[in-house]
Length: 167
Image (cartoon, helix red, strand yellow):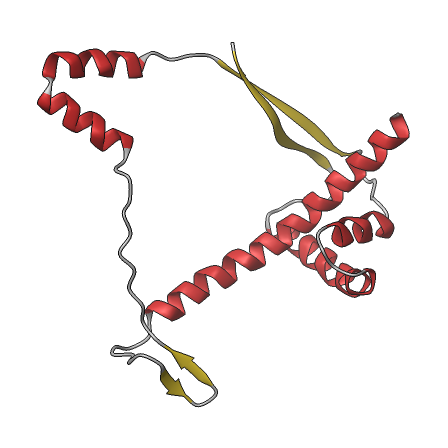
């Protein structure tokens, strides 16, 4: 069983090390994407053609549930006595136990290229794509780690929440 767990932990480390650069790139793309979309100058007519690209503005009216806090606020206003009792009930705290798995590699250790390839194929890349992407992803991860003042991508423990229960 130790070998099965070792392989799974190495895969966790690979996922984590790949997650850092990919999330960083995704977050940058997402911010720039939204900023660019909101910077377009009005008006954009329906189906406007801009050479090889098109754009249109669409409006959707959706029914949204009111936030619980808004409903409680209104309830307190309508029914002050019951509202205070409700607020007391909400204020009662309960103890929750959260279970975390801490995982990682000993300082100076590295997981293999095959561990990274397996992690990338698990999320949908072909093996050829994973082999081509792996060096760039790892270099980006190392660059981000250096910018954050960390020495390597695989040292130190990572934490992942694996369960919650009420006590």
